Image (cartoon, rainbow, N blue to C red):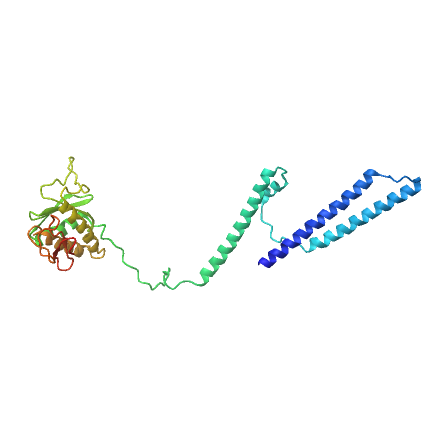
Length: 305
């Protein structure tokens, strides 16, 4: 490709040189016609000399013009003419600051034509080689469709029935609904702490843990789901509970996930009276073991887990 560009550049340079020689010969002829007869001889000799020089100049013009025509035949031909429309009239404007706009428009037309050609070729290739993993559409499709997830769109009365069964199953948990839209539960674990759980259907969206004597509602009576506890121990437990909430995220079995999460939450029942499973201490950095294992629900300090 570089050799072709170099060859074309040389051809254009030679054509420009041929034009310059042609213009010089034509200018010389016009200078001779302008100066007229200057030889200090008789009239016949002066006229013959003038005609001889003029003839020689015209012959040189003819020769240079033939050379230019030969050189023009070697130039690469422009076969593709973009549909410029009225934009092509900008090339006739003699004002130099508007000529750049014409060249920019020409390049834009070239680029759009190439892009259209490549996109058509890509569409043709993609239609000929369809991926096997793509979902087939039509009446004869044999691909099994995944059932839609509806665990986020469950009626509040159904959620009430499920939470009531969980409340009756775990005697150390007290579950109370404090808002319907969004569905908010207040879960009290004996006298240890209380948790505010925000549900979307049966999916847990947010959990915040506070002390039993802290307020969980605002002045207007709406649940306060964002203000953290003023105690560091419950802030740490909120972080662990949030991570565990993501672990028990089963969109296809939301009822089982909610029960398992509540069962894990019960492991904090003896928060201040159970030592760490690894170091055996009740307190570390003035905090009890705030982490609970996901399998055996064993207590650990944050640095001992």
